[in-house]
Image (cartoon, rainbow, N blue to C red; front, side, top):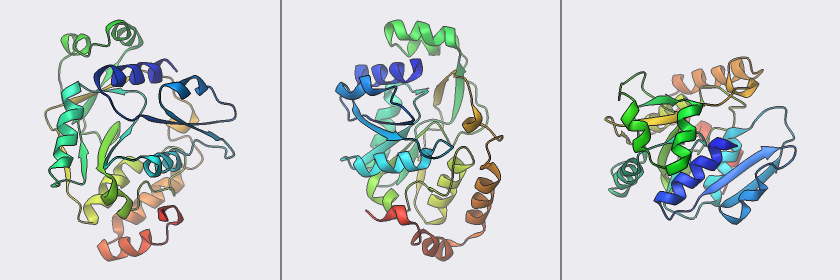
Length: 233
């Protein structure tokens, strides 16, 4: 709750943009956002958090040519959002990662950011070190190209390698993917439940889906995507 409030405040403080928030739960806890963002509530009927389905709902609902699929625990420097979108606007890229890796932000540091909404408070106290390359956190896409590519793969349920599959699928289909290799994303600390780890009951199923995608060639993948019911707009 604290992280999503901070993310929305930060984005609205820096940009005039269309923010869509989707919540899936038994009872709405984010209804108070309805006056400040485009808010969607989905009553949870499954025993897992269906992230890929929610992202596709928001992709279809969006009315802009470029979209940022954005986790609600991520902050970037303002210029990263701008530079990432400008890469898409050149029409040379269909997907852009506006970061290389991520730095974990503690709860205490996050609370200090909240007071001024100044990313400089983070950058000043942290070394810009590079760790493992990140395929999660957030990605920016050309909406038309991403819909053609199948959008999010709803065969992934709960948590799994869907971030890696997304990148693999775009590359296999021939779309060009760019990245701001010199930039970092700042990941806000949060607790983790079953849906955030390998203990979820769908993890093995998700791994099998990813392995299947990796073995396909372009023609096989295009044929497979045509069977996805959620791609029908």
